[in-house]
Amino acid sequence: MTRPADSLIIFIARLALSILFLWGGAMKLLGYAGFVGYLHARGVPYVQIAAPVAVAVELLGGLAIVLGVRTRTVAFLLAVYAIATAVLGHDFWNMTDAALQQDAVVHFWKNVAIAGGFLLLSVTGAGRASVDGMRAPRGGLRG
Image (cartoon, rainbow, N blue to C red; front, side, top):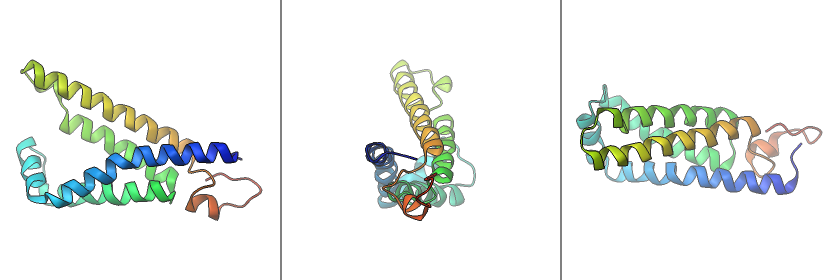
């Protein structure tokens, strides 16, 4: 059972975690050709599949977290996504330029921290201020 104050804090955390994904997904969609080119340059396989999947994961996943829809599952999937993008997009161990490497290190660990937030959300659930919370029986909120 979550207290109202806990649900407010969980809601703020959901917003904070989602902003990056909603913004990133929107920018990828608006600059789709550039995003596809970036994926090609990074050597990502199956770009024709990876690009729309990335946009969908970021936009739909971010929206689901904001609304609190299937939060535990979506948060876990976004944690996996954040780690995958850290490894594929911020591979500092392959860089020789010191400035680029330092930037990639920061972004790599930022993604790991975001994944940690999503893993925590996958355990706590969305709280009362969510679609999951509205669906849960009032005797023992688990969403």
